[in-house]
Image (cartoon, rainbow over all chains, first blue to last red; front, side, top):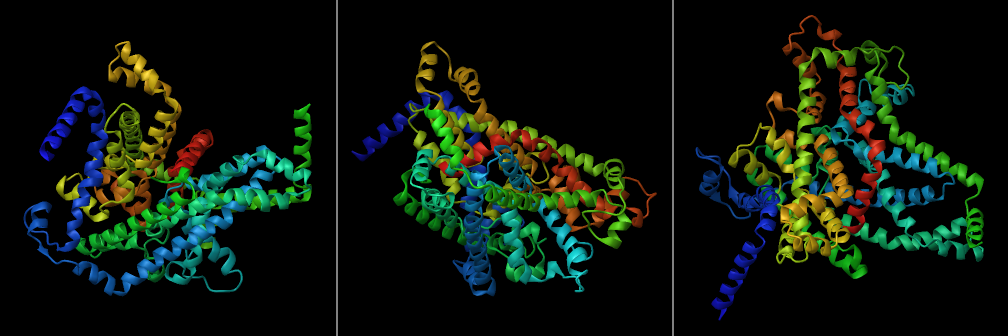
Length: 319
Length: 306
């Protein structure tokens, strides 16, 4: 019975394949990219359970001849002080970014919406959006122009004229607790403002007209109409970011800090740790294990946050 | 009548003038905050090198010089070369990417296609889970041996799942199935339908995805960081990164190009760095005002609709 069903199933696939041959051909280019770029590497995660040694042959044969070590790579990572600190750094920075985004972008969007001059509003929006388009390498140059020890703007024009000695920005971790959030806000404020601005534009204007008749001033309208109606969007975007809290922005933590070892206690996150473990320490197995740890916890978080979003509002659900 | 009344109520319902001025003031500060770093590096790039070493990076330099620009365009071949690499991968990558994404998105948007659910999921799943950096790196560099080729700079960025989803949403919401059915009855083949109906009706979506891709390729340095060591294949952003990590790199490439006449002290190291940065972001800044609205549209769809 089961075999019969399987046969009709495979026959129907072949039938479909034959009928829509062209459509299947159209799928091929993207499928090739997905297989090489995404699906083959998924099998590569067995590297995490091996003690990988490059033997004389190629990667695949060395992979199979390498010794199985079970969860030793994971244990090693979690038992070093790094296991805790990079996880903490990743979650704390991302958490901070989520909160900062909310408290800056929402008020900015509301103010932008209230400006009398539409033309100037458009100009502000454009100027604030521009940083989003800079690559992290460029951002690291911009930051360097301010934080360079010998010639940077802050040391030369603020710190030294005040009579202090120039600050060693790239070797003092404590300052980066403020610098990295500042850079993030600089880069993303315009973009997040646009999203909330779009949300405000979607609010029915009759609500405000009714409020005016009831004698509500602008401040009251913002508190009692705009903010409550934006709340679902805020909750959803926040939940979606929480789903991604285990994934740091590699460019921010790698480029802007110039991957400076002295800053690692504060700025080393999972993504940069994985890169350094591969490139600097040359330990592919442990590096893969850390990547897999991130991937699995990340998956659980995404699924969890999506489940909650689904309960709140089905339209915004990721899947 | 009602429109006049509405207009009147709109005028009444405005913030007071002092508040308006306050808001403008806040936005002027925000805009200054956003643009200041760009202005600073521009000023540094046109500052005289010796002024930089004594006075530091200033918004109002005491002595100007265009030597840095002369230097990066005339005295080094590497920068022109890297510009070429970046232009090539951006143009080739963008066209290839938009084309194959459109093909795939079209098929999974067809309601009559039986396996659309499965193939949509195949794309979507890559957003949820991936093998991580190391296995991907091993596949490209050790199994396929694509390191140090132009192809590797294009291939990994070809398919972003988000773009496939945006494109699919566009096709299924703005191209009616009946159109495809009618074309079929008229005897048009699938390729013909795709090229002369679907692509023609989707210019806005193609433009949006195309612009995203352009920016994505132009700004990419990560792929080169992993796979490129050959100086001939260094894209601009990666060159910028290498210059950042070694100032001496500029000097080194200049001596390679046979310009031995300058001594190291004469070389506009710091201003040239910033000039290189300005040259890299130049095209983005120039194009940005014209294309901004497409980005806004695309980003809002991407972020809100998921």
